Image (cartoon, rainbow, N blue to C red; front, side, top):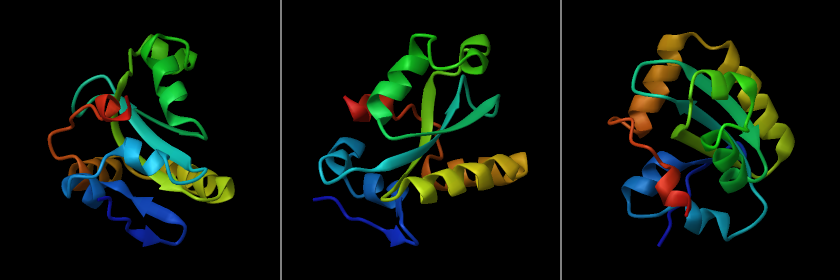
Amino acid sequence: MVLFCWELNKISLGPCLRRGGTIESLMQFERLYWVYILTNRPDRTLYIGMTGNLKRRIWDHRIGKGCTFTAKYKLNRLIFVEAFDRPEAAFQRECQMKRWKRAWKIRLIEEHNPNWDDLYPNLT
């Protein structure tokens, strides 16, 4: 059973995953828009992106076709995701997070994924 944590059009996945839910189980419900953070290893370069197709977009990053920045720094580990029911809300969150200080981003990641585990295997 997946537990959703709704907050202003946002689904917080950290509590859902800690209770045994999976990102894949969330993807079955409806059209969702995703804000995600990638890295190459803990406490290194971070990339924040947004997509309507999380599996495909992360796969593109992993094979080096996501964008030049992620390919250059080999950012292929999915360490944080948030789901939204509206693209405008996801875009707004992506822009907000990109303006954050690095320490705030790290705090958010560590609240939901303290070991910086790669969440990509949960998508397949």
